[in-house]
Image (cartoon, rainbow, N blue to C red; front, side):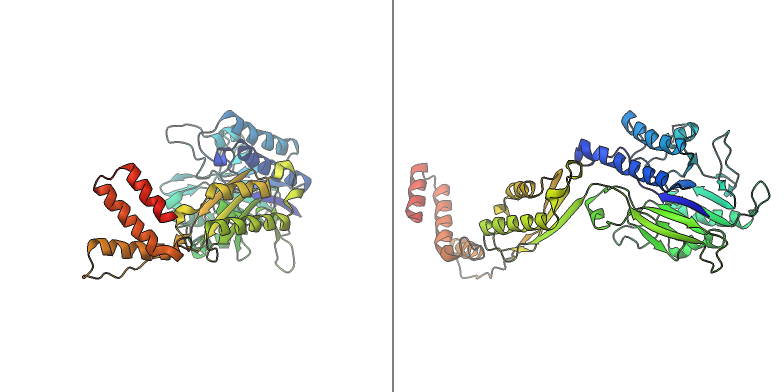
Length: 428
């Protein structure tokens, strides 16, 4: 029996919301997965790309990676990896940071060199720190392919053709009973709003030669046909990922000799990460800014009680995202988003708050009348608009008349005292 852990998309170095603690969170999530691999006593770990958030990293980010990988090294657990799109070395750089870690013997970085359009499937050389595959334990072979972007479909076809001719024996002559293929690429249609990725049919070119396709790149966890597996991101890189709570890493047990041909048992686990709470509040029934603020405040307090945020540790203070939706019966400019943000802080004691105003004001259709003068038309338009706002509906004609009068006074050069007197008389 062989056991391995598969994870991806750690994005070390991401200072989300420009917050230091979010920078640290990505390291905590990475180290948590490392510790779980050690606790599970896996034979090896697979990292399917995007260990880092960007190509150019600082010393603190590099140290975070090395601390985790050194833990695996001390536990004698090899980490087999491929480069993702976020960390692929710049063209002018001879060595990227993933290759640097391989040179330090902290990673086994797999990728094939190409000759005449075909990948050369050579074994990994501990001396050169290069190779297309490695046999980490008897009977198991792992191939790797770095991120190829738009060239991924062609690369997959080329790898499939090369695998067709590849001998399925290890260096000692033992047969390869189980094959893993690591790639940093997605499956088309997993995210409706994201283009790119290969179809399951395109990936299936590898299926005759691969038992487990270990993917990264898309942060949503998914699997297809019990052979394509993507664990999702270890931390929350955007608020849209908050709904994918069960994501993080796979623990896989391999039993090639299983009589019922179930060659592996794959279990998805959620690693430790900071909680994200995402709420939607509909404003349609709130007739005034004051009513909206009161009801939204009650809504936030109720959610905080339901989620028992008072029991969260200081290092688990949540990120709160409140989205306002629906049609406002008053002008959007009257919304006090700063007050709602303060309410969220009071209710959740969060690390960070996001308030997003997706509301819209009621649309106004004003009937034109060619017999009306310009002044009369202005008054009608203003009265109709004011009638739609609950704060002014009762005296919309009076407010419209005042607005037109003040405009005329301004155009004729009326003094400030006269304008103030007109306003004072109107509001008495």
